[in-house]
Image 1: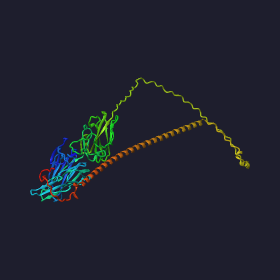
Image 2 (image 1 turned 180 degrees about the horizontal axis):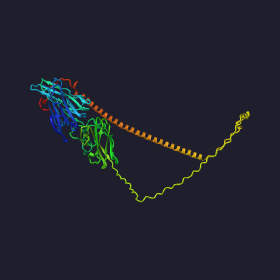
Image 3 (image 1 turned 120 degrees about the vertical axis):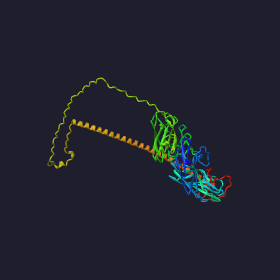
Image 4 (image 1 turned 45 degrees about the vertical axis):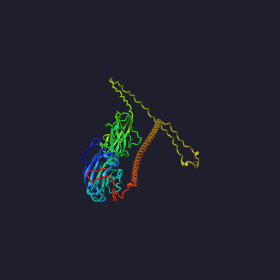
Length: 583
């Protein structure tokens, strides 16, 4: 988890372990600062009900600060924060008064930022024993692009946390003040991927004997952001990204959530939950390829940059010439990275690193902070490259220098005379005269056909030489027909083969698309299941809190409560002084 440095009295130089100093500014109207990853945080202050800012101070960072059981991460006190004193607001005696509104704005969309509240409240007493206690309350009143929700991450003894409020479960007349009594302290998670959220500070007055004067409320806050860390071996260096709305794969999980750091840091080797590639995927380079391409699934709600490194020479670090880069368009689901494979590849096991961020500066180097995106590391295999035998050059043939040989002229045969074509003789057939009708008797007409004289048909003569030539032409035409039919059958077979090949390729593409769709659906279902489990856990925590007698709340967190007698204690109350409250 990264620390968010917001607010300072004037300009306070602050160096974290990376060695880069940071300057923070806090005033009565605005506080600004950078997180170590580079996310700019701005807090704009709007006064309500006549309030003015009496002082705007800084809670400086302190890496040696002790752990705090009421905060999460437990070392959140090591972070820097703001401490403001709000004065002279109109007091609703024994009731709630609005004091100020604070709007926290981030330069990048951030997921589930954590707001640390410490020493927020106030008390005043005069020399005549008149006393005013101001129990602190916080109300979530806005956010962008959507309205976020509160959930209790740690602390807030004596207070109840709902989706939109942090309020005391009951208020009393009391002499001592501490965390949970007048003052509130704890960590609340602001759930959602947001660019800003707004809270309203409120004060619940409890008056004893009379007006003590000097109405005031201290407001002290710190922020921390979730991070994603690398998990390659130590020699490759650490890379850390603030979790935003752009990441590799289907989702990203927060790392090192129990402590915050001012430096990039890494997880134990190969221990991160990476989902850019399916479980069991084996990455590696085979043969003598000169390039290597990898299709990387991404989720980008805005344009982003993607980079990858492969340790080709296995020297335990990612070098500049081992980098590949691509731009990711808004709404893209996949992006391709292509490396130029050097000839000096060393076979064996090595590592691949993928980084995605909103700007090219976030992925320019393989290590360090990035203000957005995600980092993922994978083992990678390099196969032994085969020796390549150079091609033999063809022999050079020198042109002959001797005299060209004598070329005899071609022999020309005299034309052969064609024999004359002899036409067959024309045969004259004898003309037969038909007997006249009147010469034939009636009996002749009634004779059967068998008795009638038959007509003689002359036999054809032997065909001449021209008939043989026609038979040869007919055979040639029939042969040509057979060839044409064979060609047609071959073309039909080739067309059928092409259709089968196209159908098989289409089927393979459809199967690949279906498998990719199924993988995406499984990943979406897993993410939905994780969210449902988180919601169920939150609901269970709320139910346990409601079932706990100590967690009883008023019908409304802002309803006035009956006052109970003061408790006997030896603690000295925090009065209207210039000291910063401590709990």
